[in-house]
Every structure is written in C-alpha cells, then in structure tokens.
Amino acid sequence: MTRTIDTIIFDLDGTLLNTLTDLANSVNYAMERQGFPVHSEEAVRQMVGNGIYVLMEQAVPQGRECSAFDACLKDFREHYEAHKKDFTKPFPGVMEFLEKADKAGYKMAVVSNKFDLAVKGLCRDFFYPYITTAIGESSQIARKPAPDTVFAAMQKLHSAPEHCVYVGDSDVDLATAKNAGISCISVSWGFRSREFLLSHGASTIADSMENLWELLAA
Image (cartoon, rainbow, N blue to C red):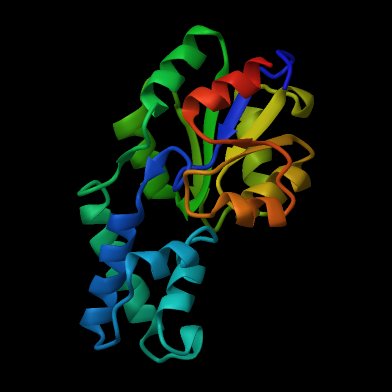
C-alpha cells in the first residue's frame, strides 16, 4: 500500500468484531425453537459471510425448502437483536488502530452482509466516533459480493476508488473488492483461515491490527 490510500472500508464480522458466539447462540436458539439439531461454533463459522438468509439456509435442514424456514429466520433475528452484544467484542488492537487511523486522517466505513439495523447498531455502540458510515444488508441495495454497498460508502465519504482499500476476512470480501475495483487486504484472524484466503486469491494478508497498519504505511 501507499499513502495514496485515504479511505479504509472494513467488513464487520470476523474483521473488526468477534461475533461468532452470539451468532451461533442465535442460530441454535432458532434451531431449538423449531426442533432441529443445533450446530457447533465451528460449523457456524463456516456458514457466515453471506448474510443471514444464507446463514439460515445452511443451518436449517433442507434450507429454504423447509416449511419452518421463515419461522427460524424470524426466531434468529429476534434473538440476535436482543443478544448481539452478549459476547461480541472487538478483536485485539482494533480500537487502538481506529484511534490511530482517525488521528492520521483516514476516512473509515463498515460494509457488511449482516442486516443493516444490526450493523448500524454495533458500529454505533463499539466504534463511534471513529466509524459513522455503516451499511448492511437491506432490500434497498445488493449485498456483497456485489459492489453496491462499497460504492454507497465511497459516495458518503466522498472517496475515489483509487484511494480506497477494503479490509475483510473472507472470499466474499476478496470478490467484493475486485468487483468494486479497489485494493484488498485480507485478515487472518477472522472466520476463514490464511490457507483458505490464499487459495481464493488473497495477495496481501494482515496477521494483526498492528500488521495492518504496517501494510497501509508501507
């Protein structure tokens, strides 16, 4: 990276916030309510990244073909909205990074496939005042890996593509950055392994928030 980058657009789950336990708990609440088998955290880790509909499609037996799918989705959303901060917390070094980046003049945003209400609430609760532009999944805009949410963030921040970098932990994030025409830094501490990221085309991987800062400053 070079200092021509002035805008950092982050993924949320697995990148800035460790949300896995709360996601798994809400998935399993919905499973238990409908009499379905529950899932381990490791199993849920492999399901996340494409929004709650895809998450529940993988969690519910027979997916969207299941007659109880809509009920499971409703149960999940209601439980997660009430419990999304029970165990969720920023990954090590995140808050220090955001403070440093803010002082250095970087513009920052979050773009996520988590539903929009939760994205805005979590960013407000954890990352204000460093991140005030937060865009999640909604019926008004195509979710990642479509570039639409990234374009919306760039427009709000008045940032040009050549000055932006996308930071995320998954193959979806790699594809999103590519589709948006911006550079990408993958992170190895999230929901996908370093080996998985490399196999899906990652060219730059940060192993810590400190390492991310070094890559941006290089």
